[in-house]
Amino acid sequence: MKAMDAESASVAVMLLFYVGLPALVLFVGWFVGYLSETRHERSLAECEEALRDVETTDMRNPPGFAVAEGPCMLVSGEAVVASDTFKSWVFGLKNIVGGESKFFTRLFERARREALLRMKKRARELGCNAVCNVRFDSADIGGNASGMKKKGSNMAVALVSGTAWRRPVVA
Amino acid sequence: MTIVNTETIPGKTVVEVKGLVQGNTVRAKNIGRDIAAGFKNMVGGELKGYTELLTESRREAMSRMIAQAEALGANAVVNVRFSTSAITSGASEMMAYGTAVVAE
Image (cartoon, rainbow over all chains, first blue to last red; front, top):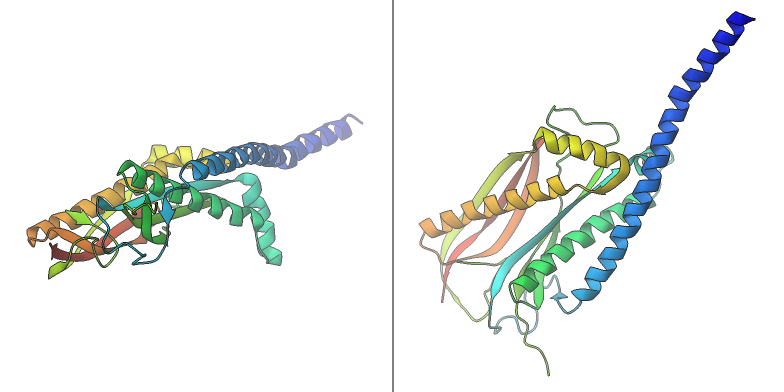
């Protein structure tokens, strides 16, 4: 009877260790990740509203550009946003059945919007009100210094560059 | 020095093409950043250390490109493009290239 008790206790400890702990990590990842995602999207919306007057286009030669005066300078923005354990786990499951991963689509969108905002901010700092020839780029900075790519370390990298210029304001 | 990623510079005309200039840099992330990133990967959110790394390497590559353009006697670089490549995990290369020109 005693031996049975010891056995079931060790099974309980094992269960707690192998199921409870990952579940806790997943839950914390989901909770904190959800909070930071919501906060980030709110701040993105606010900043986008504030920088609305900076007109962005990926045209090389937008109307008025050739004869524009004032500062003209290359501006860029970058952002790296990490996924959380929950999203990575769901993506792992998604990889089995295939299909769109909404979480990661959102993650990349956030990184791209953030990078675009930073570029617009720099354009505004230079006294410009428009950015043309906007290009999106990406970079692979995965892995870490010890040379091994950690399982589940997913991040979205967004690089944006463009030419900031002063667009004549049409009265 | 005017740096743009368009082919023309507003209000100026390109009078002389000096040729292709480029600058690159390979940067490794340090272990402190990796550890911080490892934690961030559990809860999500922006990896500020990596963003900074990208900004720094972009600046470095651009300043090397500008130095080359200055050595050629150019006063502007047009059609600037960036390119990145992963060398090994833990390090990445940032390259900036463009055409050095004299614009008036």
